[in-house]
Image (cartoon, rainbow over all chains, first blue to last red; front, side):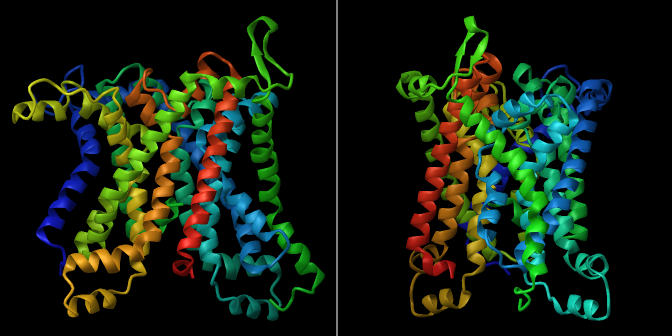
Length: 265
Length: 291
């Protein structure tokens, strides 16, 4: 059933072309056999994909970004879950102030966070350390983690927990065996969105990253400002393929819309 | 929540939120306050760089120099242009999506929202490849005879605007789509059955109801354009500077951290003022819709 007019469908096609064109062109150019940016007119070649793995700087930056995303998303979730429980269950003094504070990094431009963290980390001597960049990413992803966890805690039926308490379960047992399984979708969604946000972040990381803690997007940004070559296209294509695979898996097991809704502000 | 009088329950919310609170004080508020302080310091190469003496030098410099006026004005104009284009493209697209169903709807949603999960650097690279003088856009326009000489898109405002619309329009679609979800289809049908043309229904029934979505989407797009860094930097180059790339150059190019900090503080203040006044305006005008 489709209620759209032909004109609307044409608009839809133009819009989708616009959305996909830059990604499609990267995936095509990535397979060129030439030494410069060009469409693969004389046959598909994997030459530039091999070149990525021979470049140790890109490989190192990739592993660093993965590690950074996993650690900062995990820390953010561990902090967001108790905070979300406090917000959803208790009406306490300062509740709305805390909430506004915890969500506020979304309002602050990443460039401002970047300059702030650069000064801060340099002052305390943590510039160029892994822990320094992790902490800056925790601040960036916290609002996303908090919002998705919060959405699963709010409206949770508390009777099951009360039943467990009345049967003599300790607080920890109630949380581990009753609460956590019920809020798991929000926790998983929050973790995934946090990981993706951290993995893709470039504006703040440009300031915080040192030569020894260069994340993949920062390395790619630096490379693109120098030169646009097939190597960077094939690396970008690889990231698009990985994202597509992750999206497919998420959609299959979780529902992509549940995560993407958290992206909006 | 009849247990509020219980002393344990008065302490517990603070205990639960204390890790987050400590994190935000130590790693969010302190760095921002430090940046604010830094913006009042001055920079003097002869005296070894940053001089920790309170002065308004940086703010005077930024607010009086026509070079910085140009940069702030360009950023503002860019944000307006991108926001308007996102409204014009994103709103109809959200409505079309809303009227679709089944498999096609999810495929289209995926194509529009999927790019949000791909790094901005990658998406901008795609436009850089398309924009080149030997890029696909120019080659195809030349081939079909629309233009005789390649149009310049790399390092132009037009190029930056196109790419930023691409990066940010999914937020607009999401925002409008969310408000369309609350729309009662029966009202549209009532309008149609009473003899209104589809256009009248759209204009007088649909648009007023999704206005909050359009407005909050605009706010997101505007704020994100005003502070965009990677896209203007890659596609605008050195000549088309915006606020974010200027702050970057002051920090990592000329190493004048206090001046860079002042630019960042001004960007933050402008952002907060625009967001809060806009929010107040929306809430006053559409308080009904948020109930």
